[in-house]
Image (cartoon, rainbow, N blue to C red; front, side, top):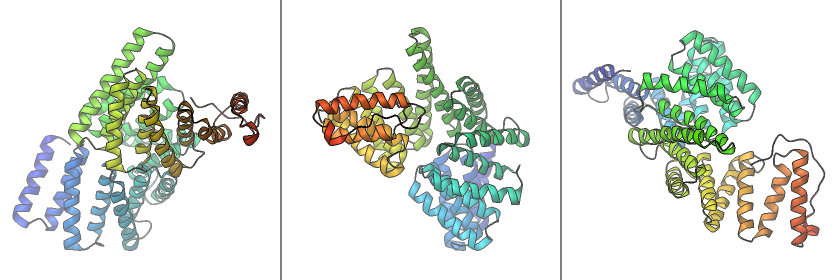
Length: 450
């Protein structure tokens, strides 16, 4: 949406406010339209204000169960989700779904919008199983009522692909990503924002599965397209900056391992410039506590850490953790991951005491969130064990080492070697008889955590 269009709709809204008042149906329609325009332009704070005002007046004038009120509640839920206000988003999304089911029935478009919105809220909270249920339901019903090529059906397909991917089902996720991209290209065209979203999601999937060159080409194309369509301050453009920086960061690691200092410098400068731009744009346009601003800062801190800039990295991680605790809550997975990252930098700086406290906090939260056998849980618990060990508290580290030995992703040979090493340490500490470590090779695992 261009500036001229936005100004036109703003003038219409102002005129209707003056002529009819804030609670008039025509004013509220304009208010909602203006919120949608601001959302598409990436002005999320202003969009939140407009959606919130429309919801307030519709509740007051029409009542909580009126179709227009339910639509406003749904839009407000989606906007709260984008701002990281997950509790408010969940309450509103559930209210919209309950009201829509009662008012319209299970198959109505408004109800399916509400199902999809609730799934998006669950996904943003890291509750991927709950999100999957919603997205599968919305996708199935939208196929039946709207057809497989309808944009809303494809939105549910895209959301389902992302959630299945998060749950570790790479085979199904890859098929769904490809299906969604091909259909959107055909139906919407290659330059449509939704098509670029699918292209970006497929690229990230390819990167995670070792196809970096294909991923890099797709992500560069998406960033270029989003810069042209949305400009540099739009959230989708900022997301693309982070994604392209992630590819450059991968290259930094490769060039570091191959001792190619010239190419390493180029890759670092590329990633660094993209992340600095992402942090500046997100903080200016969305606010310093917005989830995207905090994620951009988190990614910049990680790049600096890997490049040896530990002091600046630690300062950034401290800000990220404080911001995420405040805006998203302690038990959000992004917050817990940031705490783990902050602990890692402190450990590299030699501050094992502070690192141990943060690893303990992160471990307890992540295990409660994901269970003690999830790869993220295992990695955090292992880091905690290493830190306890470094502080001379091997006895407290023992159960964490044993847990990782049992559940971590090892090949049979790696597991046997790790068991032997731990057994020898236990023997020297006089703990071997108390614990007992099996050296037998269990079933094959894909890889050993780094």
